[in-house]
Image (cartoon, rainbow, N blue to C red; front, side, top):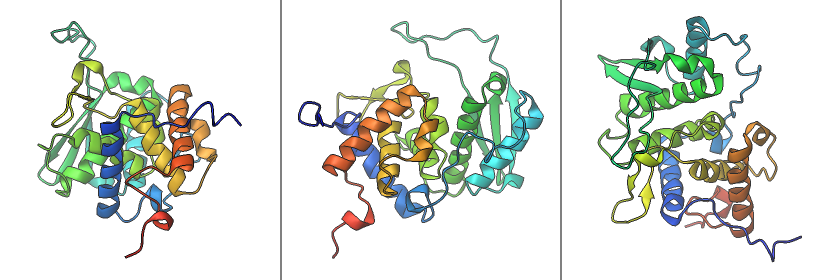
Length: 255
């Protein structure tokens, strides 16, 4: 009704917009089976995580195995450890901005994956699943030699892989991008986050709904307020403008 007054716009800056689209196309070429091609979308509910939540290692192990299964990684190859940063001094950059803590780490050792999880994550199941999904996505990418760990955007690609595999809601609700960890996009003065920002997740998830032909996807109700706003902005823009380098098959030119 008010499209003439409030023109649809992308939630991302131009370089972040282009990066999301280009890397989604790259992931599409690397993994045939994805949420963009009909793979199920994992939700934060009892259908996908039926065990009663308890902030302990038993729930962590069960959840780790489930996330491995949902992302097609052999859980038998994945081990975990807890670590504690509660007594670690708060680090800041040269501008006095918090450097934040480490939610999880990943190591590839003799064909096996070690995921280390900061123990305070046990108190926040949404954040914990997002952390596990990110580290398991890294296992998929690095363990199979799909991406070079030295490439400038490997952490960003890892986040986007989580969206690609259908667990993006967990990370969109708890984005880890921090101002203090920003650098610049290559050959640009525009800032690049180390991890995907909230607008980038919104833009990626908007593509997911667009690809699935879902103008009002049921799964979007699980997005928290901020994530919901970015998602709706991006989805409205795509349905109105179809402005993306990553297009659904029906919109791609043949030949």
